Length: 146
Image (cartoon, rainbow, N blue to C red):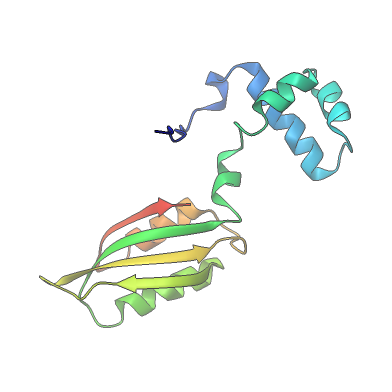
């Protein structure tokens, strides 16, 4: 059975220097400050082999959460207009709703899953999640996938 990759959030100062330099080299390439991998590795003082070995293994956290499809899961009280208010928050943040799935409310609450494209968001997904969590009637809010 193939083992799925595991991801961790680690503070930058805890990482070996090579990872930080690879991230810097990727940034130099993405911003156009350098035109080739050779220039990026020379500018950061790492070997090309180190760059290629680790380039897919490191990315800034904000980059992982931006420009992608995120799936949110909510447990909501059965209150008229709550889902509409939640969708308004997504719109205020610049997220584009792709799918909405809702269970029939039982016991006064319903489970709702919303997938959204986050490329147009000016603020981060964590800030969006905090805003949604603070809404009256939201019992639970989390990011399932992204």
